[in-house]
Image 1 (cartoon, rainbow, N blue to C red):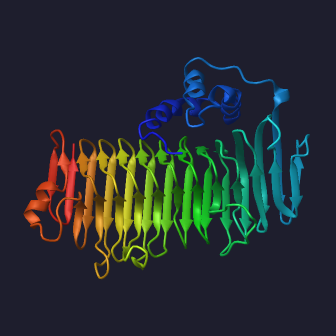
Image 2: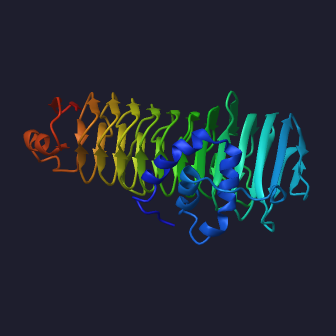
Image 3: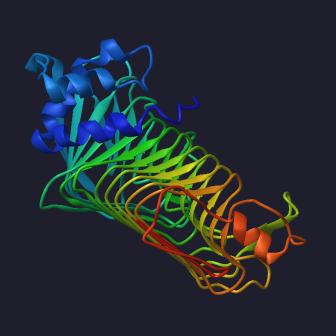
Amino acid sequence: MEKNNNIHPAKYKKSSSFISRGGFLSILLLALSMMVACEKDDSDLSAYMEKGAEEGTETPPASTIQIISIEYNGNTVTVNGDNNNFVKANGAHVTVNTASHSDSLLLVLSGSSDNGSLIIYREKKFGIQLNGLSLHNATGAAINNQCKKSLYLHVNEGTTNTMSDGESYTDNGISQKGALFSEGQIYLMGNGTLNVTGNCRHAIASDDYIIVDGNITLNVKSTTGTGIKVNDGLWINNGKIDINVTADAARGIKSDSVVVITGGNTTITTSGDCVYDKEEDDYSSAACIKCDRDFTMSNGTLTMSSSGDGGKCINTSGKVEFSGGTLTATTTGDNEDGKPKAIKAMTGIFVSGGSFSAKVSKSWACDSGYGDDTTSDSDRLDHCVTITGNPTTSTITKKNVNISF
């Protein structure tokens, strides 16, 4: 389901103060209590966000809320609160199936296992609270959410949580695209630390969209694929995010839709070279951010570095709109097979505020989609960036673009 490009950013930016003031449980209960109102369109969550932030909302009765704690301990688990026998365990491989139940659900995960996993089957929104979890699955995803509704993933303050997959997956008949995978939306929030490593496919993947908020520290690594992969968009409203991918043609963030940054401190590093794509009959390069629609940034800090042959920092089929914050894009790779670019946007690069810096060792720092190899350098320079307003600094050369307001 394709999302409206303009529906999310303001809504979730508005809700961030509410998230920081209230506890995660109250947010979850609030969200779940409003399920009926939002059932017709799972992407429209403004009702409970706005009402909760401004007016306060009653939570559902305690009897309708199922809170289940799962503690991993090597090859076993300890389960508490499972009054309806939702949980089945085979060693430390856990399945939670509430598909036929409508009770609100919160899973509290803790403990450690290097041979464990969690699969969730559900038809309603639910929450997961990470309370010091270390989980590795050598044959698939560490956490696999098969619910197509919203997953509220909260990282508890003062805790460090780690999840990773193995180098190959066993076919278990369901989709599993990363160490942390969800069929539905993921809301990443909290005040703790979450480390996710992808050793087979992506590190974090959603077949819908992902929103990052709160004061979460998110460290993402992938040795084979993308750091964060989303189908319907990524919104970064807050948090400290570090993404490092090393594979050839890998992407730090890959969105089949938009990428929107309204806050936080994000660092993305890629080091892989470009590779030849037989289907496209062209070279495919690594990129810190690759999106099929627009990239938009209005606040926060984004630092990107791409060092592989033909690498790029931002590569979008749409446009880049930068109106605030600090963006630094540095590409140091060679141009033996691909053309390294700090910023490449097929329908234009628009800068109207903040601090914008793009540097490249070879080729062009900024490519706005204007012209081709026959276009003169002076003509391309005139069209590589569109500036609105009166910047205090404006330096535009082939290999260096520096604009500050």
